[in-house]
Image (tube, rainbow, N blue to C red; front, side):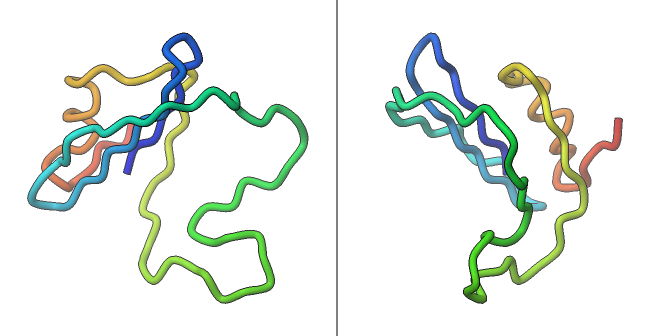
Length: 85
């Protein structure tokens, strides 16, 4: 899964991939900005007292300070095999 926020265009994007297909990027309007400050970064779980946890594995996590280009997304997805840089 890839998620991004573009402040200039006021949108957020989401792309989900499987080992068989890298889905299309979908976007929605978003003008509330992003959170900047000290906070937990929870991956695969919500920071709540509920049992809303990922039922699977997080193989790798990457963080970029810019939106990835289409070719970069495909390279990192690597037909579901990933690509550790």
